[in-house]
Figure 1: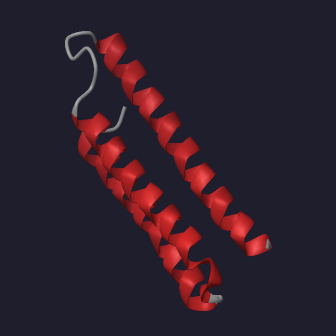
Figure 2: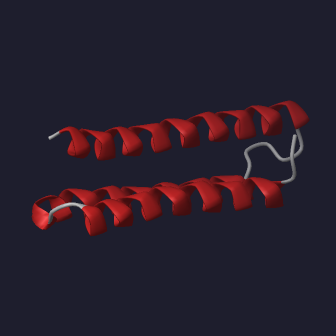
Length: 95
């Protein structure tokens, strides 16, 4: 497993990429969907904060199996959250 520090940096980087893509969408396309894009940005910030909090406070610190399982679930949840947010942004592009 990578260090917690590296995991937190990756969470920050990927979240900032999502927010940057949302801002690029706002700059490129019409402002009629601004509220929808801003809600995606809010979800991205909430996802970022939640995942960073979970990364800093693992369950079962004394049991290595529980810690591994915690970080594995954290990674899966984070990727699912990013996928959902990008799906919403893609849905706005198709309209």
